[in-house]
Length: 103
Image (cartoon, rainbow, N blue to C red; front, side, top):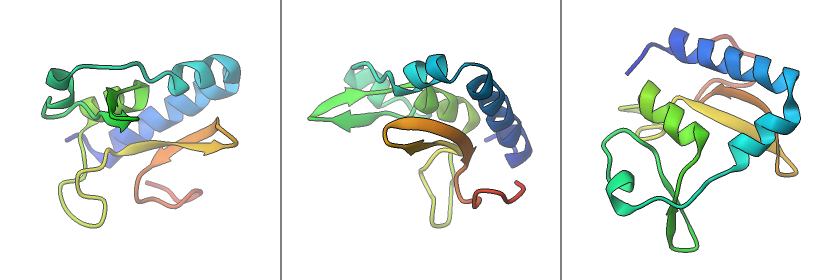
């Protein structure tokens, strides 16, 4: 797993991209195409299930690269998340860090 500092830098980057082009970032973050069981069983890539079908997106891919919480209340979850309001991403943050806190 990478450090929280590195994951925080990814969040800064994603938030910069969101500020530059929110339409593009919403489109790419909201796109969760179907994937197969082999990808779903990958040890780091994070996959969800929608209506009984494996699906994944950009945040799952990035969390697969960054790592996941190994212990504690967020064990098994990735380090970063997207904050959504009315199905629109409004920012990116670190799992387990309240909005506005420093990583």
